[in-house]
Image (cartoon, rainbow, N blue to C red; front, side):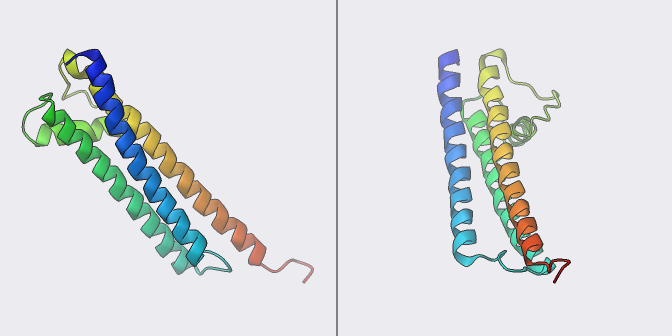
Length: 149
């Protein structure tokens, strides 16, 4: 596979994954701003449930990304069967990269694009969850009585 083909196909998959992830974040933001489940003084249980749902949604998104990469790796003929592409996609997307399954030289750039996708999407997920926790902590501080009250 030519280098330019690897870059174009890899970038296309990265963009698709990015759009899916950003769309999920937008839907979640819309829900949080309309329903405001963490406003006021949310109970610990409510905070845990809302956060678990957000985490589960992003985890599902990451899983879809891994399968998209696995399907693409299989589709271009970089790895045979179904187990090896899924395994390679997973360890590459998470940037774990054991190295026990490697791509042929004509697919290396394409495979590396999976790790770029993972780094970017995990960064977005982390930033989003930090924002949720920061907001919940700020709301919690604002709802507590002051010492002088």
